Amino acid sequence: MGKLLQSRGFSVTIQKFDPYINIDPGTLNPYEHGECYVTDDGGETDLDLGHYERFLNVRTTKANNITTGRIYNNVITKERHGEYLGKTVQVVPHITDEIKRNIFQLGETGQYDFIITEIGGSVGDIESLPFVEAVRQVRWDLGANNAMVIHLTLIPYLKAAKELKTKPTQHSVKELLSYGIQPDILVCRTEHPLSMEIRKKLALFCNVNLNSVIEAMDADTIYDVPLLMKKEKLDERVLAKLKVTTKHEPDLEQWKGFLGKLKNPTSEVNIGLVGKYVSLPDAYKSIAEAFIHAGAQNDCKVNLKWISSEEITKETVENVLGQLDAVLVAPGFGERGLEGKIEAIKYVRENKVPFLGICLGMQCAVVEFARNVLGLDASSTELNPKSKHPVIDMMEEQKKITTKGGTMRLGAYACKLKKGSKANHIYGDTLIHERHRHRYEFNNKYLEQIEEAGLKAVGINPDSNLVEVVELKDHPWFIGVQYHPELRSTVLNPHPLFVKFVAAALEHKSN
Ligand code: GLN
Image (tube, rainbow, N blue to C red; front, side, top):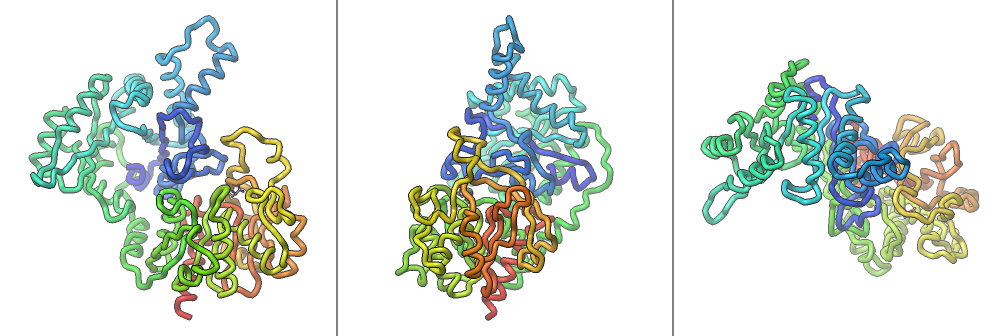
């Protein structure tokens, strides 16, 4: 919906409300919650914000992801500052007002024609009640021409009876009505097309216009969804309800160009992703999506092979990595599988297989190099606090921090690329900005020694002198980055590092 409105010339932002108590998802286990998505302004946010950016090609901020924890934290902080002096602080109106403030805040920037606010969870959840009540009030405050409610609902399919069931939707709409909310549009998730009969039934029993029953069928790729929604005229319904005249018909030419390339690859590569959370691909959502963007750009299908770092040892490495056209070593925290990552990097370094190391992956590349090229008994202090040669070490400022959540080096930082380096060619620029999320850094005490032996620090933060990019001399493609390039890859702006990494994999394959 956001994409369609944007394609008509409107400016759109999307916001996610998560009804859990954590202040933000920064402290959640990726196994439970998938990747933590980092915004330019250093927000640790829900992975849905990654989709918002990939689709809209517009930056999100901390203000785009709000949890119950954040809302209560704000209200309780105000209470301690005496802002409600003399009053009993309650869910209604104080919590709901704070939720509304967070919706209107995006509107007050004046940057957007549309603000889409997504509420996580399901209708009927105890946790989401204050959010639902806030939505009721927003609709009342702004009036029916300025705010509308869209209910996303599941139409289950009974295989044995070959039948779609509308009853759960009827019930959730009833539940919404009991909260004082009449949805304007139903978006119906379904595995099979909705017949006219089903649409009529939904319209009649849920009090929505027939043309506001929108079919949302399972798609081959999430990137098909805007076109499917356009076919269902979701955007037209939104504009009609809000009495907004369109700026122009949807212009989705570039989007369709991307889909055409995505669906008609002329080549194929196998790229290994070595990580810890490989049983839950959502843990590396942005990396997987960045490969989709970069693959399309290269007219190439990227088959990602998910490899658990614990699987890799001296004995197995050849077997596990031998058939791959390139290897990416993933980000991560405090790992057992680290030795496997180091073994993988030794293999790709020696065998000249294209390599991209991201964050922990870059740190492992430095440790591997220090150990196997310089012959040092090296490590990262994250894994061995007593390491004799801590080539990766915690920053001084980080050592004082004991609290968790929002305390890492977070958000976009500048990085200067050395002229003539591979990274410089890839970016076509010498000054870049990329997003970070880590506590440990390249230890500059070892900089000279490491560079002399051939691993070059080609990207440096101009303010702190921290090493952000390393690349190996005499290797076709070996790059490690301390930041997360995957977070900035979008459909319309595939990330150059991923684009060129896939190209390097293709090149390696053809050799
Ligand atoms: N664990 C490492 C650090 O904190 C790397 C973090 C990451 O890969 N995002 O520095």
